[in-house]
Length: 348
Image (cartoon, rainbow, N blue to C red; front, side):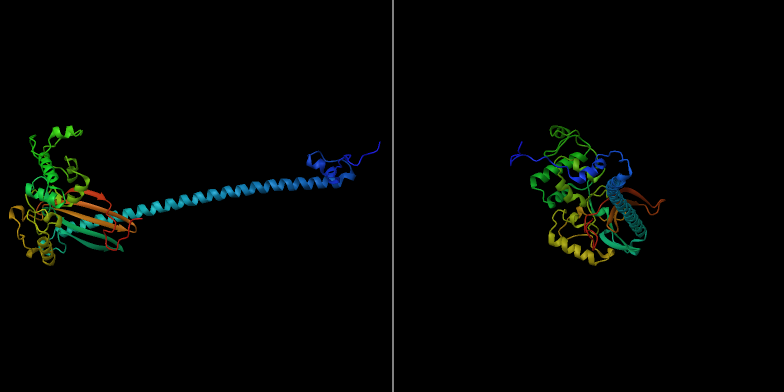
């Protein structure tokens, strides 16, 4: 029978496939001398196939080891940074503590022999290349929350920018908190007002134990608290303030205080030694002033090592003729605000 032009041709198996088919299908080696070349070729192919698999395994192992090495390196770097931070923090704390005791040693000297003022002036001290900043504030220059005259507390609220109505309400709430009765002032707050406000506590009817306790008083906001905190104390036990040692915020709270007169007084005070500073201010009633000083002082010390900063504040009661000659009333550790040290860089 004749094949037509479009008849399909029988597919031909390539010669190389006939030779390599036993190797590709992993058959046993072909027996006989005439097939030795085929066996050698199969052996070579198997060797190269195994070598390729081994190469892939090695590459995967190298990749895994690289990832592990990178992770270990990152872990070691983190641990190194943490260790360095802990070291610098310990150094900063040690510097801050050293500043506290340097100030205590200074305050043990007779008043006229001291090199540091106790009006809040900051002094920079360098020790072995590290820096500390120390300031001493006599608590008699601040307004005592428990014993200050009503007019002085009211003046503090007014100088902080509190409105007339709100300042009266806050003043009465403070007085109701610290007095020992449960009689509510006209704009004040006793237990019932706190309950109506949904609070789980009432007026203390006792003295403040800390400045932070003022946050609990009805009507006190965090914004107002931050404005007046630096002017307040619970350690002077005086009805007024000592103007020779008072910070500006305390002086501005004095009834009748005027900005230009207070600034002029501060300028005069800064240029004079402690013995020649006037104890009165023009236009200020002496009822709001006191001469008490040098009994209870707060010391603020900031230690700095590398990028670590520690701030310590200690309130010290001095009894120089007793044993021991002083006692620590409070001790607080915190972080200083960025830029509080001269030539200071922000925390990183």
